[in-house]
Image: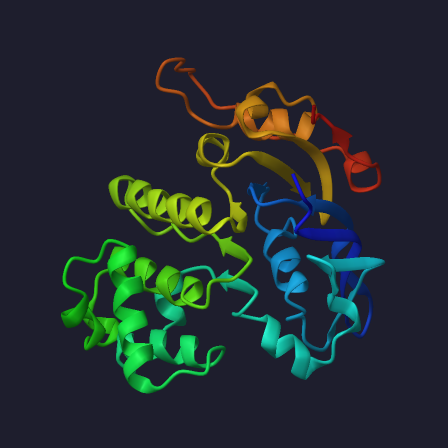
Length: 285
């Protein structure tokens, strides 16, 4: 599998008056045209890693890396103007609670069309046609009606699909999805994941799927990175996630309720200070 994204020694720091907070600490990984899951607790650095790839860390935050390369393009060497051409066009990111990333005073279809026109030299008519095609691709039944709707007029699940359509309309090489289904019920969640899986496979894109849900990532992704305190502590095949060896990963798995194996009390994760300093255990094959 060819390498689409290379990240080496990525750091994100926030300097305060009394100390420096290191949100991402020396993260390194590669991504092919596959589905890569990143899991961990809140504050483990998952979202910051996604934002850093897009160079969206703003002052007082600082981002540095030894290498940050997308399909042969050195992202660290690009100017901010050049990065704006990369964002959305080659790398798209679905933020947490995507529906609330929509502009509340602009019609849904116009926002999707605008995302397309920002990276393609087309007129309004062609952009509208393309937006309607994407609404249909994410299984919205009445694209014409939804195109003219405002964000508050659509449901949460439909809002998620609209944001996916917006991020996919420029046909990026890499999609970063940050908890895109966290606010959805299970039925809608599965529909949205099926849509993402189909579009990623058909278009041959890479996907970084950020989530708290270990079972979801294990069933949906190809590989998984487990993050703790800004570091990757373990890497493994998604289908072998439940065989993970790092005590942090084992603790996360043990804290999940299982219908077929009920226990009187769920385990509480006990942390070791050494996890913040040590390198990860590589469980990949």
